[in-house]
Image (tube, rainbow, N blue to C red; front, side, top):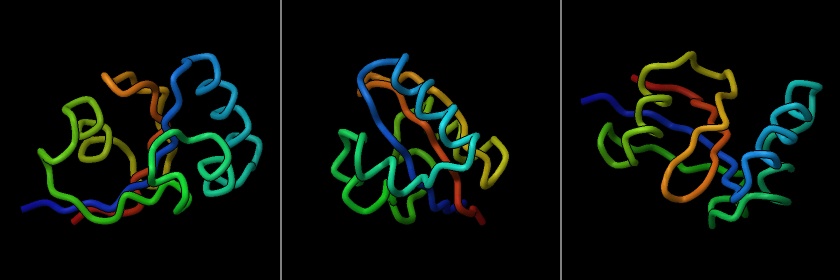
Length: 92
């Protein structure tokens, strides 16, 4: 069973997600942006979702966490919750 650890920033507007991604690409701190902008309760913890198994998150989210490059910020990824910027910390 594959387990991953990831963090994310969830916002309602794609435009805001793109603006935050640009800030991250310029060296902004992911955790600080998550605390300030994320509408997910995980935002209080810098976006940290902890460990989870494949299938526990919505498919679009899972696909990024379990298939894309680790430690790189991916997004915006649209789900029924809004737009995510996702960073997989590790998976095994």
